[in-house]
Length: 347
Ligand SMILES: Nc1ncnc2c1ncn2[C@@H]1O[C@H](COP(=O)(O)OP(=O)(O)OP(=O)(O)O)[C@@H](O)[C@H]1O
Ligand SMILES: [Mg+2]
Image (cartoon, rainbow, N blue to C red; front, side, top):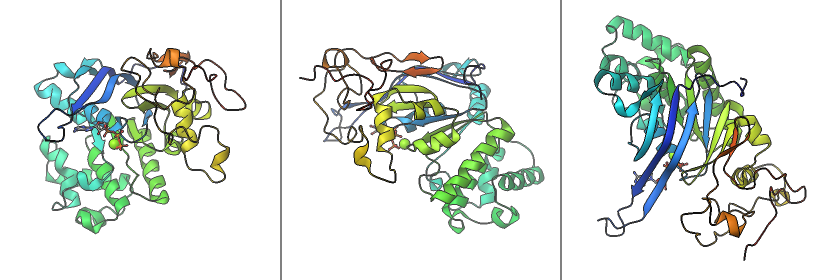
C-alpha cells in the first residue's frame, strides 16, 4: 500500500483521553489517577491493518475497548465514516456496534462454554434479526470454512472445550466477522498460541482483510508480528503516542528512543549485550519530572534535562506520514551508541 496516499479514514480518534481512578488501599477511593490514554489522535484507513504496539499497561486494550464502545472516553471524539460516535442513538448506534467488532486474547472470554459453536457464531445474526434458521446455518457453515474450520459440519455442533486454543480463536474470528464489520479490533489474538498457530491466525486475518476489505486494528506486544502484518503502526507508552507511521519504516528506522529500546529489547538469537539500547527498559526510572515533561523522560537514556523534563514533545511529522513525539527525532543516530541525540545535562 502506498503510504503517501491517504484515502478518507474509516475511523478517526480525535483527542481521546481515558483516566481510571484506582480505589486506593481501603477500596473506597483516594487512589492514584491512572492515565490510560492521553489525547490520542489516530486515523484508520479502509482495509488497512494498523498495529497498536507498546509494553504492558501502555493503554492498548483501553484504546481497543473504547473503539468498540465497551468503554467511554473522558474526552475526545470517535468518528466512524464521518459520523461522531457521541451523536449516535437508536438504530445508528446499533449499526455502529455491528460495524466495529473485537476479538480477545483469550477466546474463552468471548465464547460461552455452554453454547455450541453453531449457536455462538449465529448469535449476532439472531440478535440483529438477520435471516431465518436455514440461511443462518448456511452463513455459519460458510464462515467457519472461511476461517479454516473445514469441513464446518465437524465443528459446528461441538462446544468450546472440545476445540484447541487455535480452533477456538478461529471461532471467535468467525463470530466477529459474521456481520461483515468494517473494523475489527484484534487484541493480542495470538499471545496464547504457539508460533505455528499464530502464523495461521495471522494468515486468516490477512485473508479477512483481502476478502472483506475490513480494517483490522491489531493490538500486540510483538514488533515482529506488527512488521509481518501491519501497514502502519502506532507505538504507545503510558497512554501517549510516541511514534506513528508505516510499519516497515518504523521498525527499520525507529526515531523515538522508546521505539528503539523496544526493538532492542525484542529477544534475538545471539549476544544482546552488543545492543547499545538493550538496558533502557530495564534500568531504574529516574524521579518524576512533573506532568509537564515527556512521558518517556524517566526512562529515556537520551533525554536532555533542560528540555525533556519540562516540555512535552508534540507528535510531529518527520517525513510525510511518519510522526514522532521526541524533541530530538531529527538528529541522526550516533554510529557508536545508536543514540538519536547527544546526552546532555542529566545532572
Ligand atoms: N478498569 C480499570 N480500572 C482501573 N485501571 C485500569 C482499568 N483498565 C485498565 N486500567 C489501567 O490502565 C492502564 C492501561 O491498561 P491497558 O489494559 O489498556 O494496557 P495494555 O497496553 O492493554 O496492557 P497489556 O499489554 O498488559 O494487555 C494500566 O495502567 C491499567 O492498570
Ligand atoms: Mg491489553
